[in-house]
Length: 462
Image (cartoon, rainbow, N blue to C red; front, side):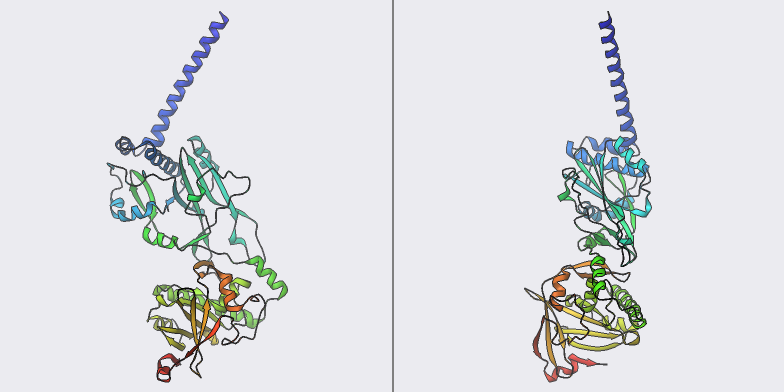
């Protein structure tokens, strides 16, 4: 008799548990799947394969979760954005329409990428607890906060840089963006610590996190795609273009501190005043060239100052920029002159060894060197005004990265050390106050002489 009662009790408990589980499934469907877009799901579900349906449902769950907890995520996925960009006007105007087929979020892929501006959410634990309740597994990836670093304080403060959410066979990558003092957005690299599960997500397929990145601020718009309401950059094509060359390099504060221990910084009034004027000149040149749409990087002594000591070299007396000749625009001279920088000299011509120099306040010069690309190297030219002799400075091939310098988002050669060693040799870390531009650089070589009948064009002193 006792045994029979126990069996009945067990059977009743099992029945109750099954009923409760069924009720939970119905609640889950109603709250996370059918809410707001029930008709869309019912029309889509019959046309989706198992994997396609999984992708769509995971993204749907994540967007519902973010919306419910006021976490303003926006899509930055480099696979999906080009597809949405083609139909962006239609997607903006069809906010309440019901799709007949799944065109974007049901394609076979392992990862969907969203971003979030750090200051617009509070990292509330309730968000992550709710994610776990609906079936997400998640991990946080932290790194050092570069905004707190400087010559006087090498901060070790850790901040969240990336989150990975995983449900079923699909991964949501959430990239955290931070505002930097140069008025741009930055994300850090994704680095796995030793004790982390390297099989938790398809890390090799993540499009963000291989390196730190920098972006201009992007306006966002709301669209509806495949029945999902979400935000995307207003100009997806521009955002994707930025992404292709977004790699960011931090200033080397630790190395700079070591440098100043060997060679104390110039804190004289003259040195401080020069740096102030050089900073203003760099900002003025950058804003003028940005309006023209001319990409540039800090070059020569300015680049050396950034790499070696995170600052302008106080005895350099100028600001040096590099521009690829393919990006040259004739209006550059007039634009800089209108900005208050009169032309000091113009050497060479567009086809060969072009160099421009402008005069800032109190004789602080802005030198712009134009770079030419050959099969195996890059070069810029120099001209001696009194003799017409030409010089050529050879550099190994390089690409461009972003950095922050003097509170400005600016480009530098990614292969910075190779670039500097080409220009200044292996002893670039030893200050030299005596420098002959015709003989001191290890990468300089003679490049002929301008014909006398060209001098009026290629040697202009104002």
